[in-house]
Length: 325
Image (spheres, rainbow, N blue to C red):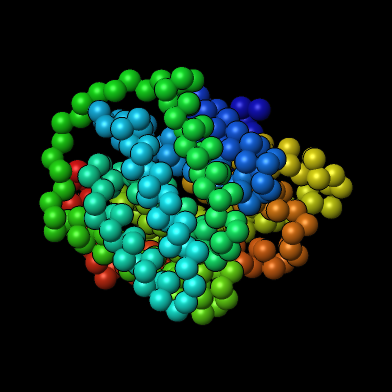
């Protein structure tokens, strides 16, 4: 087992990393199971993503303004995110661009590294695009359950010790440039995705965000690893899929892949993306032809990554600005 982990991950994750992977896996699976059982797979995914990102953003920041002080404002932002996503019309990408700028610019925490607080409402907004009015109450319920899971995890299951962090707040010019990068990337992803097909617009923008964060990562190598991991995960799934004839086994393998993705996220991004791709295919088995899905995943990685590289070239940030917080 140790030899296998060394082979696929480069090195065995530190025990602390494994402990964190255990937590993230339990949190995400709780959201997928609770909301998914009541409202279906799509709502389970939203609930799991909400709980995961919200928990990670709070522990990554590690400052005195914890989740308890934020949950009211967060739910209000979530309502706004879903309401904007439910709007129809050609101006929705522009509204999303402006909303992204607002979320990023008003962030006051150490958003250049780690998981920023604005990522959760922004992800909810993008992944809720095109939602019908009758599904909005179910989406709000899924978000509430995700917040409850994150809050319970931080306060009860794995308490995070609050600590004051002395740091210099980023100036307005730096925040403006960073917010402009994010908003232009989201707008470009939405427009390009809409041109290629409405089913891709939100995922194109979401892929850009994932590849663009954290800000101090080298974007081009990350894009190449994203594409490589997507291809490798697709090949592994293709070799395994014909042996799987049970939906239950597919879901169990999806859960295992999700855990391994968390385990290697910090130590080997290529390996993590490979398992993320496997998780996606096992979780969505039978929903669409494999050939269509793998082409779509590779296309999203290439174009979303291309947008991330483009905005980093057009609006470069100095190393001192990246480390400022």
